[in-house]
Amino acid sequence: MTSSRASALTDAATIALRRPANWLQLAKFCAVGASGYVVNLAVYATLLALDVNYLLAAVCSFLVAVTNNYVWNRAWTFRRQRGHLVFQGFRFLLVSMVALAANLAFLSVLVALGVPKLPAQAIAIVLVTPWNFVANKLWSFRRRRG
Image (cartoon, rainbow, N blue to C red):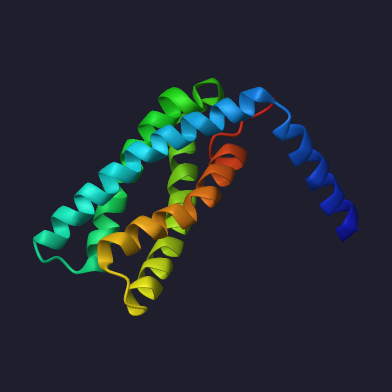
């Protein structure tokens, strides 16, 4: 049964990759993500300059960036898939919290390995981006049927 599920997922992914609309949506998601990336790093750098602990700074900059990303993704990237504001917002927040946990883990490891804090945060954000797109497309902003 596991191989049939894997085959079904592979088939679904293949079909999805052939749809130009999905590539356009990915491009929009990346554009929104880029704006969130800039917001995140700007807030993070500002908080580091104010001598805030780097992990606390990462959480605070995440909260600002995730708000930016939710508003733009809802209004632009996934506008045809809009559902109830609070329902989608809650799902987006859950996905983002998983991304934040992963981001903090990557950030901590990179800093422990000697990577400076700002570049470490930049790398950590990039590493969690694929999770964010897939989870938000397939769950947070999924069109509800019925």
